Image (tube, rainbow, N blue to C red):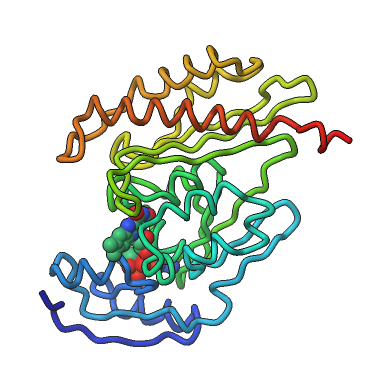
Length: 295
Ligand SMILES: Cc1cc2nc3c(=O)[nH]c(=O)nc-3n(C[C@H](O)[C@H](O)[C@H](O)COP(=O)(O)OP(=O)(O)OC[C@H]3O[C@@H](n4cnc5c(N)ncnc54)[C@H](O)[C@@H]3O)c2cc1C
């Protein structure tokens, strides 16, 4: 199918885009990578009268480390998340998850801001950014808003970004020393949307006890979900395989995965439980210093 007709303007600054957005009202839409919006236009599931292209806005794809935070411009492509040294060195969980997004063509165009605004419950980035306790900066003509990822993700395809707002930046605090993290997912073919997935992050003290744990899951409901009860089972523990198995079981207790042609709700819950267990084991392994690193 072909999209309905629309006007198209290339914004040359954030301010320009914000004025266009405010003037266009509910009928105007930002286009970033276009990897979700263009299919929606072609299926006529979105019918904006104005598309505001932000791809040529300078400075929106910068990645920089400021004190203990990595600031990622909203136009940063998924592919860049995988190759940026700043991200690889400070937030290795992000490239590990981004590598699972679709195929190279889509990763070359799709953006971190677009993925968050689109809020697909099956997307990888919201799940890891929730685990990393990130926040976005959204701008409108009314000013700037700081939105924690947990408040950004409302439901499947629903974010708390208002029609006159643009996400300009994603800020991710760097995890403390002795933190290990891992992401894994399962799909029938690599590149397909996942049937289930999980991100785990643990921080250990000098005696190997867990001082902080974060577990988030993909496919367990209408948005990325943080499993607080499972996390609290791990705090102050030594993270034995028994502890980890119990936490993984608890993580899926309250999940309500939707049954689809790819798997029933019960099957998807079991996939997620397995992935929580697997990522926790990997996270503990990565948090544990090796003999060489202690030299
Ligand atoms: C075949 C295929 C497979 C895919 N598989 C996966 C997958 O496995 N995992 C996954 O996570 N994604 C997948 N995607 C989606 C892809 O990751 C998209 O790139 C991403 O979801 C949206 O980013 P975008 O920059 O393309 O946004 P766009 O398509 O340009 O926009 C999406 C929505 O976000 C809004 N928007 C975009 N940028 C901003 C901003 N800065 N501020 C405010 N609103 C904004 C737009 O107005 C629109 O409503 C797939 C896409 C395709 C076509």
